Amino acid sequence: MNNFSKLIIAASLSNIPYAHAQSSQQSTQDLTAIAQQYQQGKTTAVELLKTYQARTAQLNPQLAAVTAMRNEAMQDAEAADRQVRPASNVGLSLQGLPLMVKDNIAVKGMVTTAGSLALTENMASNDATIVQKLRTAGAIIAGKTNLSEWANFRSTKSSSGWSSVGGQTRNPYNTSKSPCGSSSGSGAAVAARMIPAAIGTETDGSVVCPAAVNGLVGLKPTLGLVSRSGIIPLSHSQDTAGPMTLSVRDAALIMNAIAGSDAADPTTKDADKLRAKDYTAGLDSKALKGKRLGVVTKMLAGYDKQSLALFKRSLDILKAQGAVIIEQVELGNLEQAEKDEFTVLLYDFKADLNQFLSTTPASVKYRSLADIMQFNKTNAKQVMPHFAQEIMELAQAKGPLTDTDYVQASTRAKKLTGVEGIDATLKKHQLNALIAPTTGPAWDIDYKKGDVIAGSASSPAAIAGYPHLTVPMGLVKGLPVGLSFFAGAWSDASLLNMGYAFEVARPALPAPRLKK
Image (tube, rainbow, N blue to C red; front, side):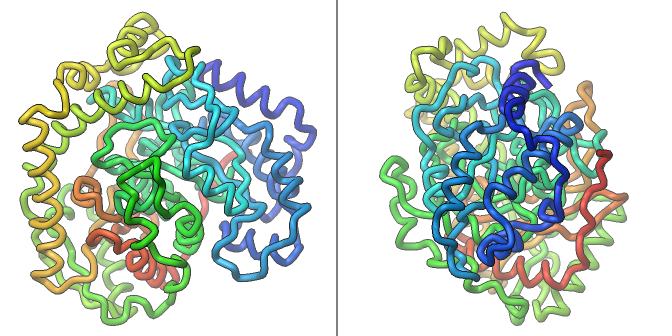
């Protein structure tokens, strides 16, 4: 972990006398169970926060999942305890519940770094819209989580979970293994029960991959369902924030809080009209009955025998719950779509980051992608000890968003994955969703090789802007593997319902065993 991050966490916890308190059973429970205890008066927001602060102080030196604790969190918890408790089983309240957010999301009074030492003076004067919504629902923002620096869009040889601010986040199931990224800290922190739930962000795979390899539920929502205002961008074409949780119900609970329109993000203009009123309402163990699920053949390539065997057992569970499995479903044009996607991301990253940096406080000296790249060169020993910045260099060489190459690639990528991709495939086979392994078991952290990922189901939904849910299937060699459900735009609630029915039928997933 970088000294900057160590100092922030040390300063955050140094004046907290309960930071070494014993963690209670609460730290092993999901958000829903904790909410019920809070609503029933069996615990307080202060007690909950103390528990998770203690567990973070205890485990973060091993995992480097958290970059900063929020000093005002206890004050918020005390205020929550003075309020009237919400009625039991209300799915629209997060009152008194501690959460963390990825460190590319603005929290008033905290720096927002995207993992880069260049932004250690980027103090937020306002909350991101998603943080405002969480606070309105009653959540306590306890701290910030580490991420792959610049959301993993700096180098082709990057190591997921490494940043110059937070160091290398590690997988709680095996600390020599990758946590995936870029929402690495959110995944590791929740898996290690350092916090009951967290917010990640995704451009392509950055919620669902770290959720899958850390044994979590992760939802990448429909593009435009959740506001991006106040989040450091990678690509306006694909960026979104989403929940990373211990259960499907927890993800639905958080979606109730964060979904909705925001005038500051025009992409969300239809969200209030098209969102579910209550994402927990359809969670039913019988939700898979009669649902037609298509197995994407190409997405089974590259996996080991154990992962494929686990996937087959998961198909059997889906069938036992009443689902109709359609095998050997083809989802075409992926190679061209992914090629176009990279072109779009390069253009978007330069344009969107330059726009963002122009709005940062005067204390931030670096006002453009070119400035960031120069900072990285000047501070190469700290910033580039393991990998370089060749993706940034490619992005810097791109022109404006009016370039023909950009316009054509953007249009084509959306069409190939959307109308001619997911939509056409669902219609052809009369499917409710497409399914595949999310990715393989976590791989070794290796700075020479970078990330070595066995497979991925993330790109079609990410490019199209469609929802993608991952739910743990089980363990392979002691490491979690997730099952992906993805479908058309605004089908988030349907995916959660199906994922819930699978989750309650599947054997319970063991928690990681960490040395204390």
